[in-house]
Length: 175
Image (cartoon, rainbow, N blue to C red; front, side):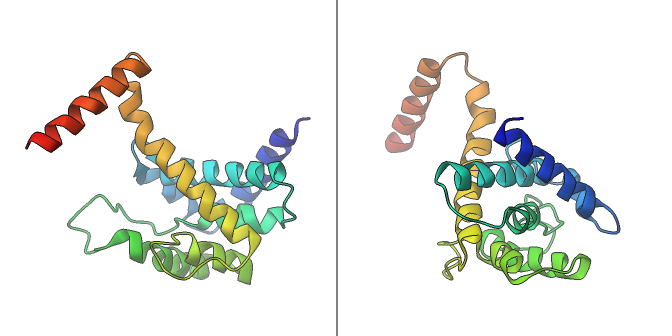
């Protein structure tokens, strides 16, 4: 079994543990970036976090890191809906996610720190633990990939994609 497969097993086990007596599966209902649900995004962040820790040979508690990654966006609302009463989502959702996760689960300090600090540097308090830093970075990479993916797929080739970006940039400069 490859290492990434063992991480997938750990993630699946944690998802199984989280889905009982909680609202974790509700994250499938909410879109995060592009056409990616919060559920899919959180699993992607967890897997990428494991791969980063392994690749860089960083000693981490994988269970804490995976659990924190799975709950880092546990805010349980549609942040795209301007009528939901939430403003400045990027700044406020870590605390909303932490409140929901604290209600539904017993969190340890590392998991809390992952959830509350994953938006650094937008939220100015930096992560405290290696696991928190790794999830913070994995979240940025996953978010960028998920945001660009739907746009990229709408073009037939990377050359066409680049040409479209250049045209968009020219139009912005002209207008």
